[in-house]
Image 1 (cartoon, rainbow, N blue to C red):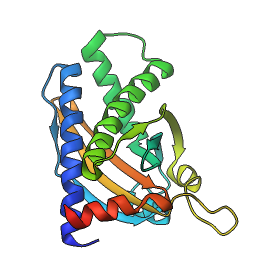
Image 2 (spheres, helix red, strand yellow; image 1 turned 90 degrees about the vertical axis):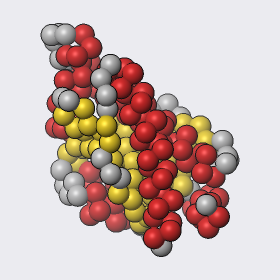
Image 3 (cartoon, rainbow, N blue to C red; image 1 turned 60 degrees about the vertical axis):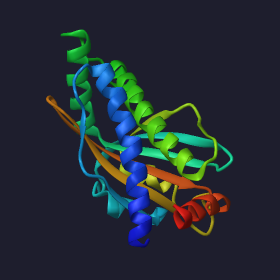
Image 4 (cartoon, rainbow, N blue to C red; image 1 turned 90 degrees about the horizontal axis):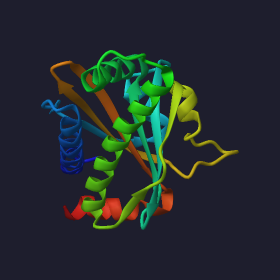
Length: 200
């Protein structure tokens, strides 16, 4: 990835994260800031190393991308950090209530859905094509196990070989939640993104 391509992808991250931060701020009723994004274009098999999570446990939101340029979105959170963030979020919204696993999971799913939709809208603007998310699904587990379902091998070739990664942190007075946004276009759908990079 050239420096020019990196700047285009960072702008996608800034726009997507900005929209997500605005939506979260409206829900939380306090300002939500952003850390400086970092970006990468890398093979799917290199995600684990680049993510920095290693074999740690993560919460991963997965959404299929439907429309003119199919693929998949994966949003990664550190499981412990995201759980603590959700607990603080719920205390601000509804006060002191029982923090059940179901409530925490449904709230994280809502937050991840907001973030994923905002990034997807920014990508759609970049390539000037309609992109629609499927119903999101949230998975907890070791990052290596989650990524294994996306990896490429000779016996079970994946639809995905490359990933675009954007790292952001969402910050408010109660703490920070780090987010890694991954977009994995299907192999036969890479061209609109490469074209967009060359003309942006």
